View 1: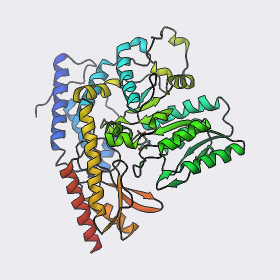
View 2: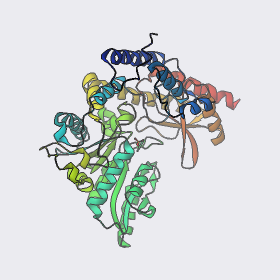
View 3: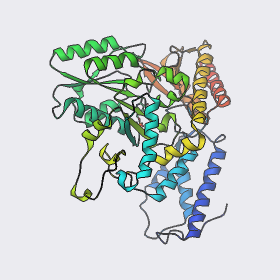
View 4: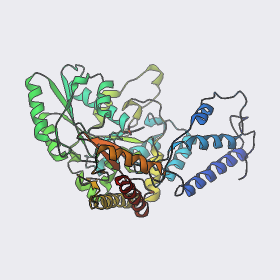
Length: 469
Ligand SMILES: *Cc1c(COP(=O)(O)O)cnc(C)c1O
């Protein structure tokens, strides 16, 4: 490996030769990393104290060599989990499309201010264009808009603040919102940050893991009768534990009847809307007032990209806009959003290119095909595990999550998880559903294909057999 100049750090503005050498070094390391992924461990847990101590050191007065610093990063990254691994089958994916990551670096060097449209109108249009395309994908009407955030949690916060402002105004007394035990905790967290007490969050009973619309209607009615103020109904299109989709048509209908803001958390499931099966599963999402979808989950982007879509962008603006004398030079550009007024952030990096470039480079069909493959993999895993008498697999996958457990019970499940993860070849997670321990398999990384999945199933079966003695 060639070494770049040891003195790259001296000037804050490296010369052209140095920039090119730094770029080559990073790109060649990226290519090596990607080449090595199929052989690399999915996780490496164990002694990390030395690495942790090194990374806690403050920066030196005199800078050091670029290569050495990249070495330090790669040594640090080697500890823990590698969600880019084809054997990573745990939490929602983060393979990290290399085209998106490179686009991000390219955009960051240009460092444009996209907080208000006036200062970079065509870049804001690039981001807004992706948002409008996504809004159309979910069947929201023309004029719908949204926000690219750092993730689903921040997108949910903006949605809850918009709903609160739109439906409750300044008076939060007696506010109630409706979730289930399977709703992601970011909804309750957003409510808390938005100033609502824990008692505002009502947990609606479920039937077969889905929100029961009849029970929801009853709760809303009872709460109204007690003088409370129901304002938001949160459905989930792809729960985190089991990937289950709530009955969106019934929930949308209920929300409309009761005048509640209908929020759909499609952080994980949203991307699957690109496929025919996902489209059918997510029917009813078009009634939502707000939808959260995480491109860093089901569009395979690196972490740090969430999306909020809103039926009426005025609701976002009304809840978030502010101003200051120091911003008096900024003009509003007709037809384009000023993102700094639509959410909690003011200064923000330009997030448009990391979405726009992969979509235009690979084409939408490439994403659809990859997501279809993930649905096929989930069904393959479901059929194989359900056919094996060692396992109990109670629910067909709605999307791509398969939960299963050894028939021997919770403790056997825990031992099986430890055993398969200790191989370092695959990584699964677990969850608790209806009080019972389940292993959770989610083949949604874009690098996981049938061969990797079959190998993973082999490891799981072998592990279970060995434990069963
Ligand atoms: C991951 C997830 C979230 C939270 O999104 P972040 O991007 O992690 O902040 C919200 N809802 C669901 C259903 C999720 O799976």
